[in-house]
Amino acid sequence: MALLLDTSTGWGRRVVEGVLAYAQECQSWNIWIEPRGQIEDMKLPEGWSGDGIIARVSTSKIAQRLLQANTEVVNISRVEVPEASQFYRVTSDPVSSAKLAFEHFRSRGFWNFAYVEPYDLPFVQEHYTAFASILAEHGMACSLFVPPGNMKRGANWKTIRDAMTQWLRSLEKPVAIYTWASDIGRMVINVCVQSDIPVPHEVAVLGGDDDQLLCHATRPAQSGIVVPARSIGRSAAQLLDKLMHGKRPDQRQYVIKARQINERASTDILALRDRRTLQALHFLRENFMHPITIVDLLKALPMGRRTLEVKFQTQLGRTPADELKALRLAHAQKLLVETDMSLQDIAESCGLSSYNYLTHFFKRMTGETPGRYRKRAHHV
Image (tube, rainbow, N blue to C red; front, top):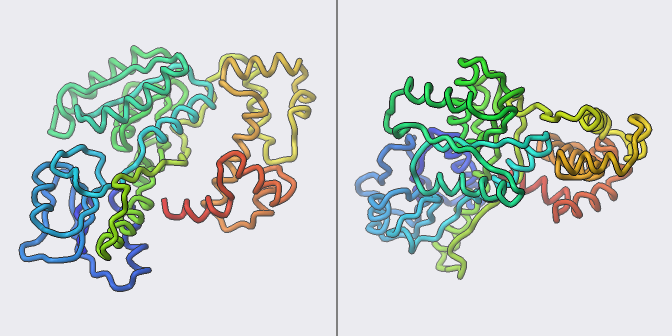
């Protein structure tokens, strides 16, 4: 089989890792792949013949070549190419990413939001539209920055930087900015630094993906949505395996949701103006790993329970109890992904009494067991 996709991005490399993980289980796959950049011409070597192809079909030219190859093809691109309509497809879900971004920012108290759209392309606009739509559902607006010229085709860097600086300075602060990808988030952070705009205190930046190299190439380091690239690669390989064995599923489109964010310094801020709410939030964040309840919070910061709940709902869109649950869930998810700790140890680290309670709590919050989450997350 052959892989036709870029290997210059973290997303592309993780897709390849997912394919290779499945291929190791098959043991009989012979895979052709060459290092490629995003804008390089994707084509098979002359004389190649094989049983299947996994490709990022982003242009009509690539689609036509693959049709002529007369073999099974699985497309992993979100780009809508008419000539590729007959290919099975596995892609990511921009709506799930947008929901994660919104919840991440709202949990930190943000009311002002913005988005940086680098290219005048339908699939990028779909990414922005998903975020703007969720904000609109909650009665919030989204400021949009579209750079002058096409950034991918060599637009003048100074022109882009000056336009972005002016736009950033015009935004009401503090503001939460969601971007198309890690490289765009890196640009926003760098422009902020050059313009003496504090990150994250005035501008918090969250990348639409999580390229480990690019996210750590800024100061402060950039938070990013973990796009499920390995799952896309693995699912595409599994689907291709079925096709190569003559099985043709009725479902032709498979969309895989993003489920986690790698939080770093670029969004490590609580954008709350109310002192009492900020104190309460700090108390929860410092103590959620202990078996505390909201009663303990009210003892530490005496006030009426109803008053506290109204403050939280008004500024964060959730109750203190909801915030406590969210903190424990996020910590449990982090430990499940990044450690091999037992469920009992994870439960105790989240302020929960037992692994049985952790399982019940986790399934109620996510719809799946901790074990299932850990197994699936290792494929992301």
